Structures are given as C-alpha cells and as structure tokens.
Length: 379
Ligand code: NAD
Ligand code: TYD
Picture 1 (cartoon, helix red, strand yellow):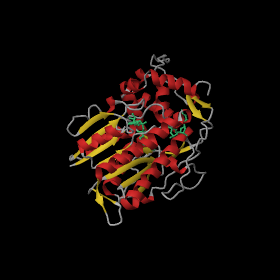
Picture 2 (cartoon, protein in one colour; picture 1 turned 30 degrees about the horizontal axis):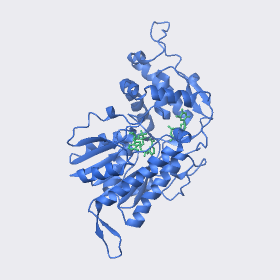
Picture 3 (cartoon, helix red, strand yellow; picture 1 turned 30 degrees about the vertical axis):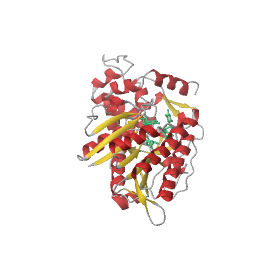
Picture 4 (tube, rainbow, N blue to C red; picture 1 turned 90 degrees about the vertical axis):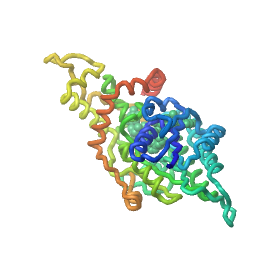
C-alpha cells in the first residue's frame, strides 16, 4: 500500500488527480494538504474524504513543522506537488506571493521529504534513499517561454519564462533538479500545457467564458485573440502524472500535452456555438441563463448567444504568443498520448458547468466578484 501526499488537492487539477487515483488504484492512501486559498474549495473533494483512503489537512506547504509532522504520522511514499499560485494575471499584480508559495513552498516540501526519506550515505557521501519513494513536481510548459508560429517545446528547449508565475515555476523546477543533482533525490517533473475540464476555477479562460455567457456578460478577449494555447483535458493529464510517478525513471522530465493548439478567439467562438447548440437541444438549460427575455414563440430567447458577445480588451502585459508541446518523449517511453479530442473535451466541460451551477456559485463568491471587477474594469 502506497501513501501519497497530494498538495493542492482541493484545487482544479489536484482534485481531479485525487478522484482519478482513488478510482484507478484500490491499494493507495492519499493525504491532501491544501491551504484553501481562494482557488481551493473543500466541497470539491469532500465526498472523497473518508479518513481511510483519503484524508484532508488544511495547511501551508511552506510550514516546515506541519509538513514534518505529516511525514512522521503518515510515512509518505510519494509526494505530488500541485500546490501553487497558478494564475498569470494575479502574478502580474502580486509577484511576491508567487515566489513565496511556488519556490519556497517547493523547497520546503523537498527538505521535509529529504529528512524523512534519507536512510544513510553511499561511499561518495551522497545520501541513500528509502526504496520506492518519489517526489513529483507538477510544472508547466510556460517555463519554456513563448513560441513563434512554428516549432514545439521539447524537454530540451531552453527555459525562458516571462511572467512572474512562469519564472516562479521555472525556479521551482531548478530547485527540484538541484536536489536531484546534489542529494541524488528520487524526483520527477511533468510540464503540462493548459488544462481544462471539471472543477476549473472561473478566473481562467474557458470557465470564465462559459460563465459569462450564462450571466449574459461580455466575453473579454485579450489583445487580438490570436495567442495560441495547447489544450489538455485534465483527466488525460492525471493519467500522465500517474504513469510518470509510478513508471518513469528517477530524475525524469516529461512534457505532457500536444496537438490541441487553438487561438483564444477560436476557443471563445467554439464555446459560444456549443452553448447555443446545447440550449437548442435541451431547452431546460435555458433556465440557467440570467437573461430570461422571451422569443416570439414564448421560449427563453437565445438568439443573443452569438459572436457579438465578444469584446476585445487591453492585452495582458508580457503576453506569451504561443505554447505548443511535442509529446514524443512521453509517448515513446510510457505510451501516453492525449486521448480526449478538443471537440469531446469542450462539450463535456460545458455540460459539467451547466450541470454544476451550485459548485460555480460556491467558488465565485464576493472575493471573486471583487477580483473580476478590479481585473476587467477599464480594460
Ligand atoms: P489551482 O489554482 O486551481 O489550485 C491550486 C491549489 O493549491 C488550491 O487548492 C490552493 O488552495 C492550493 N494552495 C495554494 N497555495 C498553497 C500553499 N501555500 N499551501 C498549500 N496549498 C496551497 O491550480 P491548478 O490549475 O489546479 O494547478 C495545479 C498545478 O498545476 C500548479 O502547480 C500549476 O502551476 C500547474 N499547472 C497548471 C496548469 C493549468 O492549466 N491549470 C497548467 C500547467 C501547470
Ligand atoms: P489563462 O486561462 O489565464 O491561462 P494561461 O495564461 O496560463 O495560458 O489564459 C489562457 C489564454 O486566454 C491566455 O492567452 C490569456 C487569454 N485570456 C483572455 O483572452 N481573456 C481572459 O479573460 C482570460 C482569463 C484569458
């Protein structure tokens, strides 16, 4: 029986990972450590917490005493670190918090794992490690910077981050590899592209656009909308992490994503079209719209759900133009590829958002409304 420490497990990808792992593996235990910042919501995983296979601890990954005590209590075999400040726009407003959580938090987890897992020294003085332990860092393709119209990120692409967020994630990756080189620590890193799917916090592009349509608000596209992201369905990502943690060699780095590149404007148009189609196919969804004007047939009108909702707003500072992943290494070594096409994934995601309005309401309280007004006012 392996025991996992999953940090950030009440956030978007972390919660999907917790659910995926509990479904896939009968013989594991998970302890979720999450500070429940604005981006973490316990309601996302409360049905999974049974205090037998899955336990929740509220706390900060930077808290050495707490993390040491969790290692002593649960004797973790694996750490999967999702905990982070994750939104580029917020990092432009408050860089220091990103450096604190993403770099020092990672370093604290590494140190606590080192104290718990080292069991001796080899002839050259390098630490030796308990069998079967692994520290896994969930990183991002944003560490590679921005691409022009051609080419892809491979694992050998030089690290060239631009935003405070991506600079902090890059620093964290370098610290992880420093522990590998200096202490021979068993580590791995995955660098994924933009995820989408259930439980996505509404500040990010895809859920923001879905929610704005339902609320009858404008759809704010930064700049010309020509920036390109390589979209990855979150469950495909969870599968990749499971494979890397359990099957890849110590010290491995894998890019996760690939061949799902879209301009932002295309994503927004697909969301508009898909919501409108779903409302035509299932008129009961129209009750979710804030705008309840009736059409000539007495049905709730949806004719306004069209591209006129799009508004081009001031661009993000230092906005990376294009991300695109070459996933050859993970495919060749572990047989992983992104199974979910964008057409399938986006419909599932929109349906999930239509069917889980209570979750969306719960995470978009007054703090989020204040953030939205501050971030988008005068843009
Ligand atoms: P998220 O913002 O939805 O969730 C982050 C979680 O971490 C939240 O539950 C939050 O409460 C928790 N957290 C924040 N600070 C903490 C701290 N100091 N101690 C403990 N918990 C803390 O993020 P996400 O989108 O799920 O991303 C998860 C990881 O994946 C991050 O490391 C992010 O950098 C990386 N990533 C995300 C994407 C993406 O598209 N979402 C893409 C590439 C990489
Ligand atoms: P985002 O979801 O914030 O992810 P990231 O910045 O990590 O890629 O943004 C995805 C893309 O969408 C990015 O190019 C910025 C753009 N975007 C908008 O055009 N409008 C928005 O309101 C948001 C949140 C993002």
